[in-house]
Image (cartoon, rainbow, N blue to C red; front, top):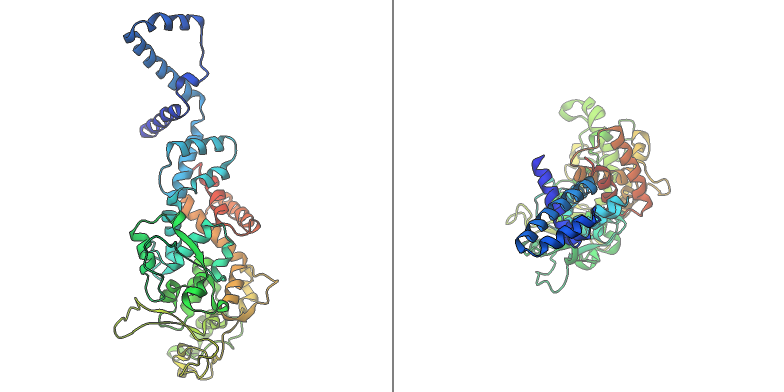
Length: 446
């Protein structure tokens, strides 16, 4: 409490200095006070004493008259959004905006800080780029693209569907972007480049060589491929996309009422010799997951398994129209035929056509866009399906709420705010800075 009071006094002293000193304040004044000042002004010692006394009186009056709560709220708002204290001038400007009822504008002022991009947004996006959900993982093309999309107020749905990637600006003496290493982004971080100005937008297809219609925002970045197309059967890409961008894992989506006709051959129908396990457990996830994961059938993460078993220097791989996989005899990657003998009568993947079975049954609760067909070919159309769901919009608000309020939404007031901000997010063409502003305004009084 004492520290907080001292902080406020220090802020107010510096505020007075910024405003031109105590003499500019409207203070009680009498003729006797003026005469007294003139009388004692002849003595430099007396003048010093009077000046000191007058300054203290001025400070006390200022503290009693000013709205200290707006300064506290401004500081808390700035701290929560950027992770660092504001400058005195920024604090005063934010406090003034708060006093005027312009809290969102105060939040946008805080977001002008470089730390909002290099710290808050990097920590915000980094867990989405790796299976360990490590916030301290290096900057990469996935997280840099998230930061750039937020900075430029782009439609946040583009992160799952657009031909877009953010790279370091030319002239920064960075290694060139590479499809098989992260050196470009590591140099951005090592050189402490200000990400508020150091990133520029480019087309992903021009960097990776993917056809434009095969790009799907951050889902087809090198970092995403390294994390979620590494070995396996590509189901990890769907699972972690759901976790990161719809805020749900597969377990809550289990639905045993859906048809199992698109479940692949690698899923045993009687694990351990007991078909009940498949019926009651396995099928509940795979009935919806496998038809969606078919969108990734032409993708893989290619690396030297002998000399680089962790795939540190690998790259995304995609079978274009003329490229046929030797194992499958189609464009479908070999991993889609892994363990085909587990249940030979299971679904055989022949193309990248996907269908959203979750539009029926209990998972209609994810709020699918009924103007879309609910099926398509490839990752771009699947990204569009996911990004236009109500669950996607609400998930972004929930993540911002936790990042800014430092807790999950708990009370009925919190849940109402989540719903209100989700509606506002969609109405403001999915600009994520608007969400940071509204949530920051909600939590700044805590």
